[in-house]
Image (cartoon, rainbow, N blue to C red; front, side, top):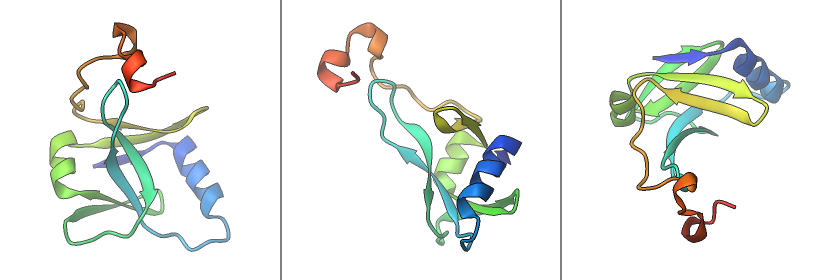
Length: 107
């Protein structure tokens, strides 16, 4: 299940204004110190995907990833889109607060 906040919907509408609305993929992006995170990309669904219509947009997510996270809330902050999985993703071995930044390049 995909949930799109009003702020995120308005931002997507502004982006697609005057353009054809294509598919939007939710995918697992590699992370730095804090591990993997969910992200968005323009992409069309394929046979391994589940698709959802939400707020006038077509979202796709690989079926196995959806099974893992169960749901995704898409919101907008001053930093851009934020995707919150229903079930938390596993964290990486360390965090920036634990001193990994010298090796992972967080700064």
